[in-house]
Amino acid sequence: MKHGKTRQRRVEILESAAAAFRRRGYHGASMGEIARALRMTKGSLYYYFENKEEILFFCHDYSLDILLETLARIEKTGGTPAAKLRALVESFVHHILDDLRGTAMTLDFQALSPPLLRRVIAKRDRFDRGIRRLLQEGMD
Image 1 (cartoon, rainbow, N blue to C red):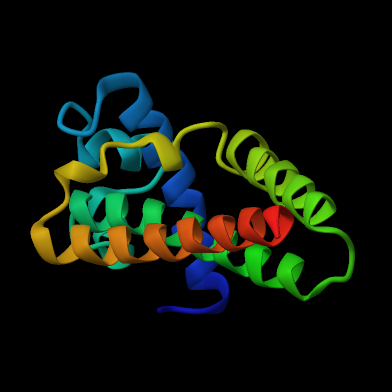
Image 2: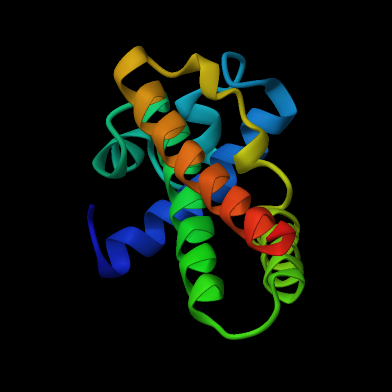
């Protein structure tokens, strides 16, 4: 994963791409449209991402990384299982609505190639298991 300014620029591209995907669908949005929205050339866009699929993967991967980091932080805190679950749900909703403007996590991850799809599903499953741990802790 690229770091620093490059990572920040990739996140800016993610936000623009997610908006384009929301407007036109994954298959309808073009790399040119994403680049124009960012006032950059397609060539510059290809510096950060090889293709549109890599952008879609990054949308999911980035979002899931944030959710997994949030889950880990919350699991380490004290408090009741209900308080932990509430904190996780609030963080999740904040991330989806404020950070991602409601798009990246709802994008069509089925459009990914099988190797990238497996990586997204594996991370999604890790998050799901964390939620289940919190629920089980509360039930116990």
